[in-house]
Amino acid sequence: MFIHVKKYGSIVKVSAVCLTMLLTSLVATFVDAGGQTQHLVTITGFKFVPAVLNVERGDTIVWVNHDIVPHSIVVRSSKEAVSPVMESGDTFTYVVGSSLVYACGLHPSMKGKLAIP
Ligand SMILES: [Cu+2]
Image (cartoon, rainbow, N blue to C red; front, side, top):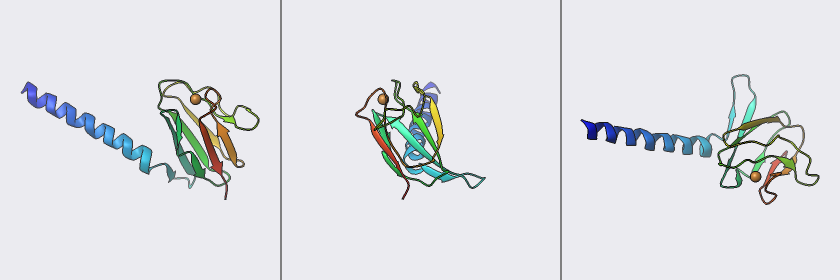
């Protein structure tokens, strides 16, 4: 009985990992009930994923910090802050006004781009 419960637990854990991978890899862009397009950018392993996103003016971007260290979003050229510092697990929501070439304010080698075609 104990072994059965243990096995079941590991299957649930594996499923949760798979679901997380699916959500972060396949559902990066979706349209909500109100017709608003949202894009998910995952911060993981000191990278923005996806690093380059094609967006439209008015789209919503949600950055999610999955790293154990804090990150932030700044305009790459001016270093102007776009987001506050996001601790591990934090999210930041932003409405696109224009194209944005950005970096992490704490780790300048982390780069990303929101491109309006
Ligand atoms: Cu960073």
